[in-house]
Length: 266
Image 1: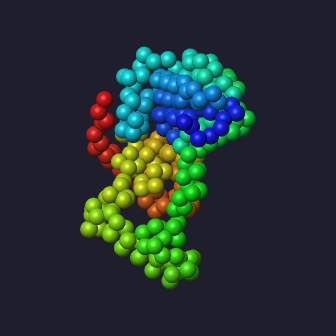
Image 2: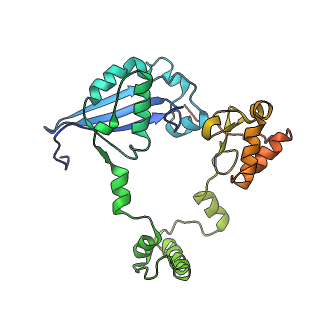
Image 3: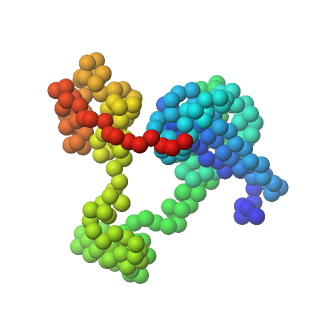
């Protein structure tokens, strides 16, 4: 039994896409469960052709390749069917407010269909999780060490609390590696598709590509020839050192070698 008393349908849904940009990327997979006020449920599922190549880094996450969706309909071709399913229902998901709803709204807009999420109420499971399970130092000290953080935000108290939490974590999680090199790889994995550590520059089809702002999707080599001012702007502004270094080298005609990444299995 669903614990909420519903006065109108509630749709719990999840989206897989070509990427995380609502405007630039496209939906590949849409799965939903529609909960009715009378207690009945109706599942909805659509596998869609995004009309654009699916990046390898996205395939590595959801496993859906260009071949799998090559004969599938586009979102626009199924847009009325999907709109009918959603009707005037409220919406729910995990991080739906930041990802799934903006992605769905943009797809409907491209299909020339009005879909106004502001007219619908939102139940986001992630927001409940974060509101009831705080992820701060005081909460960690209480969870791992059963202590109260009496002087929160005082530097001396915070650093001692952090050390206590670390000790408590190693006591609780016996499988944690006990050497820094292995721990660093486990906790701070490098995305092989990031050219710089922050991901402002990404590898796309073997080319260093801008991954932010108005030039997102532009190839760095092309910008050297057509808009070097943008690259100089990156160099002069408050970007991470490794991002600036790649751009400085690019202006000199020096570009990093693309990574050797195994393709995701079908």
